[in-house]
Length: 241
Length: 241
Image 1 (cartoon, each protein chain N blue to C red):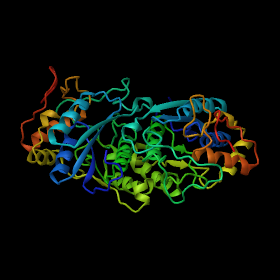
Image 2: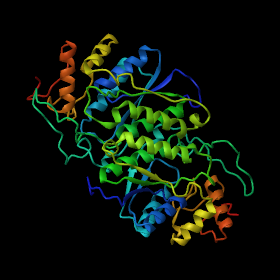
Image 3: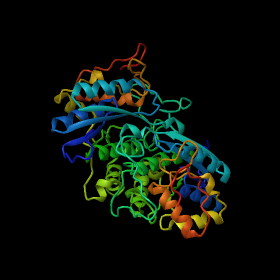
Image 4: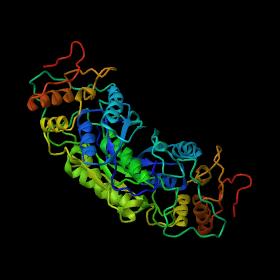
């Protein structure tokens, strides 16, 4: 760990193992950042995304990949970390409820993830964080919007040693205004192999997708809109159309 | 867990097991808050503070006490979570280095703690968080200042479902402008038994203090200034004057 260095090309990239964060990592690497990938084992149902995070970081060329355990299950309140809350499913063509934050929302998840990324950045001397949030084709989560990113940047300035000493933290959210199709086209230009990523909220242990949750619907629609064959591996019996 | 309720008297209180957070818990309870205590096992050296947190929450009358594990050791950068970094010690009467953030600073610790508290508050339907930060007799940590608390409140509004739906989160930091002696006098009025708390950064397994770290110096000086006998249990051989 290059503690205390001041390398402006060092970046911490949140890599979940999903489609968006893989694209962000490829984007940051293509622009010359020396990327340190950070993933979280937060008790998520879709644990195969953690294996995907390792594959994605290694294949794309992150300088390191680190996994941090945070016990989100202890606070509950989300279908992703509490097995008694059901992940909503819908048939192909069925619209999601609009203006409703779904039960897959994990309270304050991105706040916690960025906070840990901030601490890690400070420990290794980085000032740049990358996160794959998206405010277009997303699930209505409050912590995926530009106002959230801006408020976190403001917090980072006053929360840290580097900030107090006059350094500026920047939170890069390069996908925030892109559609899922645009994200996919961008990733393909950058050489991302999306077959290695896992988006499904209830993917099985091998990473095969259910085809019915919000994440599956958004992903499949993205490939359709991009005019690109969907490389997702669906579980036997999954609805994949 | 009273999920989804909207009880304005519900509060999440960060309780570390130290002197300040015990006082905050007593303060919140005395003002009629229904307090849910949250503690963090973050790989700290002074693990006996976790036992103290349980004692403090139970004795003072928190409605619940919950411990969350967060692997801060994985990001390093602090003497409190990395055993290769030395906790600074000084003799009685020796001044600390001024204007220097010490190596016991844990990068982004209070940001992460408040973020988890925010998620927990959202999950149980609380809108009020209490934290024992102090900007007077403290160790120069950036995340103990009013600007930090204000920036976190601003973030909470845009980061959460409750915030998006128009609810207001409030971060209460009742000790922020008090001296250590004022905190101690306040706690004693509220019935806090400080012999049950652990402040020392390198307390032994039984909670006995070293008498030499910054936390010990600030605590001892606080009792002296308050004119109150110091109930701290020092380890054999500790410098306790």
